[in-house]
Structure formats: C-alpha cells, structure tokens
Length: 200
Image (cartoon, rainbow, N blue to C red; front, side, top):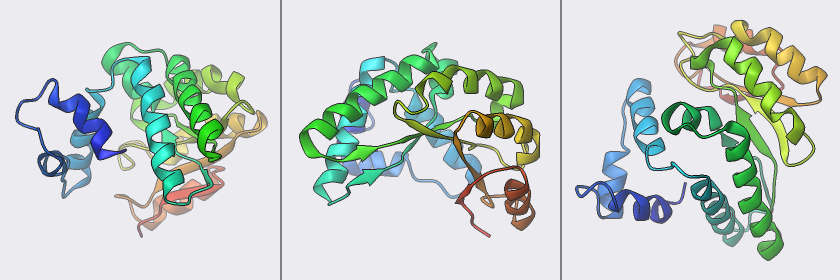
C-alpha cells in the first residue's frame, strides 16, 4: 500500500500520525500477532468503496512507474465486511474499477487474488467463494488463504479449495509463517498451487 495514500486518510482521524515516519513507526511489528494488530488498525481507515477504487489505481500507478507490467495482488474483502459492513463483491468491483483505470492509462495489467481469510472459518470461506465466483475471468484469478495459520490450519479448507479448483480458480495460501514446514506440506496436499510466504 502506498504510504502517501494511506497517510492522507490516517491524518484525518489520528492526530498522532501526521508524517510518513510516524506512519511507518505505527505499522512496525515484531511478531505475527503484532502484524495482525497493525493490519486491523490499517483496515479501519478504508471504510468506503471509493477508498478501494482509489487505492487500486494508486498502487498500480506506482508499480507501473517502477516498470512492473503485471501484478497479482491479494485483497481481503472479508475484513472490511466485518469492520465496516462493506459487501465483499462491492470491494472487489471497486478494486477492479481502479485497476482498469490504471491499465487504461499506464498499460499495467492486474489479476486479483481474493483472500478467503482463514480466521473466519471454512463455512465463511465457502460463502465468500460463492460471492466471488461471478468475477472469475473478469479480473479475479485466484483465491488465497491468509491469517492465523496456527489456529486455522490449511486442512480445514481443503474442500473449499477443491471446489475453487472445480470452478477454475488458481489457489494460493500463506504457509510456514508461524506453523513451520508441516504447514507448508499440508498446504500442498490441501490443493494449493502456490505457497505465499513459505518462511520455513
């Protein structure tokens, strides 16, 4: 996420964070749980669909300026459903609109990986898969699985991933961040195509 883009929104509501240095300090973390706390804090500042449209265009514009021609970013619409009541489909559509503008102006292309969010459980993941299925081939290329790996191991989501495969989605999952090599192995056997992080 572009620091300047986020800082503009944080300044409106948090008088203690007014400079890029202060924002970087606020987002610093040492443990995975601290990372999750920073993530949730950041999510609090994205509470309108227009935010996601603007953010997508900003990020892709920055990447295009660095010479990137194609990117497959991960987004977690479910976090904003939980925090702000935003519909997952609405967040996806907003991101796709912003990405399309960046493509038109800068030529960079984008395929979204939608995080099903392991912390919300396999039933919610299955519902979210249903929500994003209409966008397969319309800008969404894959499902992902991020969050608290130790508490929600990849095996819990094997059936959701199998169904995602039947629907034509690529599948990726964070593994090895906190749960070690066994989690990476379980991710492969759980039908993922790609391991995110893989810090073993």
